[in-house]
Length: 373
Image 1 (tube, rainbow, N blue to C red):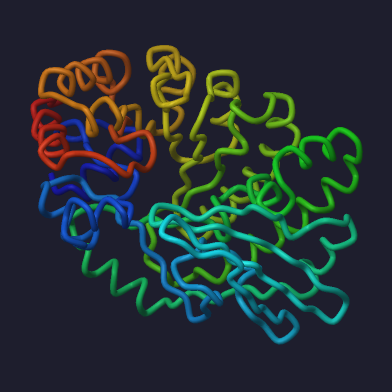
Image 2 (cartoon, rainbow, N blue to C red):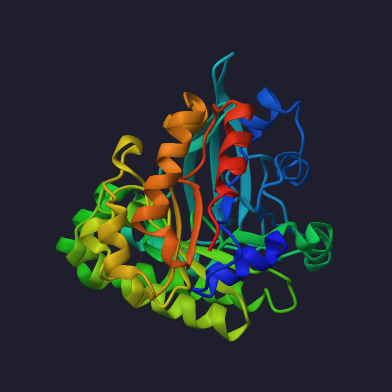
C-alpha cells in the first residue's frame, strides 16, 4: 500500500497492510532547529512516514504574518485592523490590535514567541459586541489553486488536512478564543440564551467557510479543540454546547466530500461515549497521562472502536524527546495490543511538539513497519 492508501483505509475503519505511523504536524520551531528549516513535504519524505500534510492558503491575509490565522485579524471593508508593538525582546513580541467597525471598536492583544502565539486580551468584552462579528467580520477566501497544487505535490505520500477556520476547529473553541474559556463557562451557566446566540453566530460563520471549500482537494478537516476537552469543561456542557454544533459541522463537511476528525487534546475519558455522536470520521489525540491527558487505550477502544477511526496515542515526550529504541518499541507494542491491532487506527504523536531527536522519530517509523495486519 502507498501511505495514502494506508491512511485512507484506516480512516474508513479498515485494516491496512501495516500500522500507520504519523505525527500531528511539524512545528516551524522544530523544523528550524532539527531539520535546517525543511518543509513538511521534505520532512515526511526524509523519515518515510505516512504523511498528514497540514496546508491551507488564503487569498486574504491577516495584518501580522505567522500569527494564528483568525478572522478578526483579517481587514475588510467594515473591519479595519491596525496594531502596535508595546513590547519586543529576545523572548517574545506583544501585538496590540485595534479593530474598527461602523458600530464600535474591539481591542485584542497577542504574544508571540519562536514557538507559539496566544491571546492575552480577548476581543469580546461586552455581550453586545458579538453583533460586530455577525455583521462585519470578513470571511477570508481560500486560495483553491494553491491548495490543489499542494494536494498534487503530496501525491501518494499521505492525506491533506487543515482546520475548520478560524481557531482550532470547534464552535465552542472559537467562542473561548474570543471571550476566554473561564468567562464562556460562566456565561453558559448564567446566560444560556446569549451563549447559544454567540455560538450560532460562530456556527454560521463556519458553515459559510465550509461552503467556500467546494473544489478544494482536502481529505480531512479538524473540528473540536482543547477547550472542549474534559481538562476544561464537563461532559454535560460538552453534550449541550459542543455536540449539537459538531454534528452540523460534520454534516456540512460530509456534504462536500471532506472527512472530519474531532480533536480533544487533553482529558477525554468522560466524554468518550459522546464523541461518536459528533458524526466525525475520526477521534484524536488520545493523549496519554504523561502528556496531560487521561486516555486508557483499551477502554477507549471498547467505547469508540469500530465507530470511528482513532488517531494518536503516542507520547512524543517519552518517545521523541527522551526516547530510546526500547521505550519507543514498548509504547508501540502497548498501542498495538490495546487498540491498533483491530484496525481503524492511525498511530501518531498526541499533538504538536517542539523537541524531539530525528533518530528517535526514525526509530518510531521503522518499528511501526513491523506491526502488520
